[in-house]
Length: 476
Image (tube, rainbow, N blue to C red; front, side, top):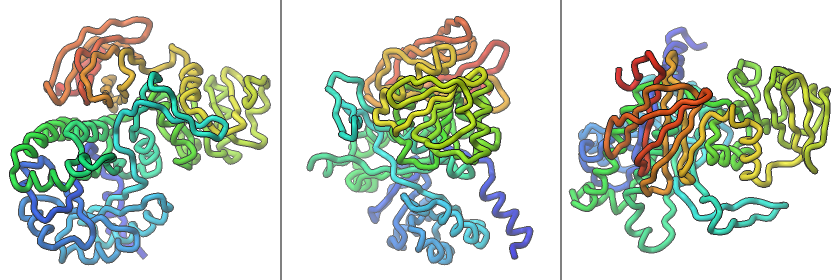
């Protein structure tokens, strides 16, 4: 039986106040530059890597994490004191997450000084593509080059991870897409690294980022070309690690109820692409005030009897629920029914409505547009103009009226962005990694919204908004 000390250790490990925005570098070369050169102190190496590399890294002040699969976790933890590793990254992949948690619980108790991180399914390289791929009637189709650019982001993955593992800061990785022989030899561009760091920082997530072998060698050897490129990366690493010392929760009025990432991914991805802030809820969250503050929910997971009553109460109180491919008898069906399309029925109940879709979402782009329309302009938290390649993520500071808006430009070309955000703010300050903090922007306020123009956004940027009579959070 566990003693009280062991339970306290586990509680502190799982529920200590998190600090996000960390980048861990995946390293494979036998030589290392100093931690001062990299600007990062956390390295990830494969389990069983050279002991000489681990010892060299420790001597230079690095924290070394061994990357293991579930079957290796116990052996890695047992040998941690001998090998000198600081933590373990457990690669769960697409396997059952609860198995990982069950395996880690006794290890966390037995090795309280060892850090344990769970790495779920692989993400995507952040990038902008020239065309959109959608599925129509079971057939994949590619849009024309003139259509709105397609963005590969990890917004949906991070949101799902945050709901699935609330005790751990979301952690993800991805593989670089190197399409030709030259790219495979040289590796990603400096801007590719910058975008990866900016996206993780803007999403308040941690990232394990691969450093291409050619860049690893250049940095270890003090090559000037590698050093010049990495100087830019260090600037971004510093910018986002500083913000990670302040807390904030995602500001969203749309909820996505799901327990299956694959089934809901494309819809969530397009909600993010349309700058519709959302948070992911598990079916169990419906019973724990999870719907508080939401105006619209999209339900992919079939609710049980109690959860269905919660959804019905949400609709009756004025909310909108979109139920995707859920078949059965539900209490919201007692409302006034009307057919709204070939595959959809709407039920009006109290001040809201429940919209049942009899099929899965085949066209996520149209679906995201429909969600925006259902929200209406009055309930849309944020809108961007002149920003087809930009994602915005708003955060509410806990206990304060301040809002922080993170921006990511996936095109990597400087642009000017016009922003409209819900709320009345008198102080608007803008900062970015290239120019630092802060430029004061001139806001205009109208009907409960604030508008302003960001003069220059290359890849990453941040806006601090404060109402009248408050001290800006970032200035404290």
